[in-house]
Length: 368
Ligand code: ATP
Image (tube, rainbow, N blue to C red; front, side, top):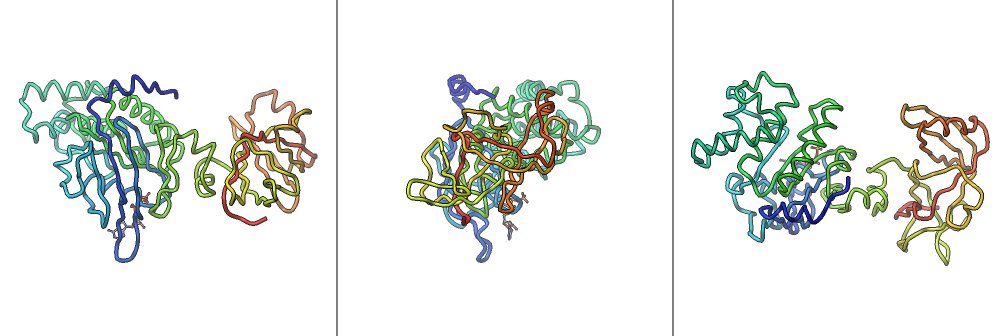
């Protein structure tokens, strides 16, 4: 998805930038968050991504004001928020457990934050109507919450979170209860809504594809620490370390050896398209970046030879395993286009593969 930076700024005049400064949260001597610092731009869609227990929810709760950090501070539009109670932060929130009021109608649920803020009745009617339009549920205004589907409930929760035009929107795994198709549809809808309203949004998920689909930038969190902050494309193409490379997308990690001039794999010098860290130890191969070797690729590709072990047909793509010696296996992913299928070697046959220097990623760790 291409995002037009200029239009983005125009729409986000109301949105607030956030500074997270050296936030640490300890429980006894356990660090749930360990010195986390982040700058979030006004109107940005930022996702916190990490495995279970990595500290994503804790960071969101610190932002919301439900959890007091042990150290560090939060600034919103330059104003310190660290000690401000949740209801005074003016943040919209959609949490897994932030339930709608089941005994109230859809209209009354969405109107609730406006009534709390003592908006006049006519204005409430207008604002709720607009929020319902934004989530495409105007026809359900008088329905009871218990008579809604899961996807409709989540849209109503979203409408309630944005109806009072918050400066910041916080969402914690809002789609985790929905089935895959609805989840994917809602990802697009939430992102579109964000682009319309331009609210600074912080979104928590452990689903890497969801994060890649929705975000301007992704923060990968591991064990309470920020592992990398980058755009979806940069995270995928230039993972900063083995954890990020393994957590986002598929990859095969292979040990490399250091030589005077650079690195080698299985005795062959590795061509790399960009500056390489001096302490690299592993080669990251993305399965879809590998191609069957064509003549003339020696100059700007790294070459591998091996035996095709197996091919698994997975519908839109297939996954091939190639044994390349020393007990190492490369994974290669191909589309199932008929031209690809027609040219596939038989399992057991010898194959030669190529990986472009620009797709040759080296990260720290491992030993050759
Ligand atoms: P998940 O994806 O499973 O929701 P998460 O990344 O959101 O995980 P957190 O809920 O932020 O993780 O928890 C981070 C760590 O802090 C976990 O190890 C958790 O057990 C611990 N933790 C969270 N709250 C408390 C608490 N009140 N007391 C003690 N430990 C806690």
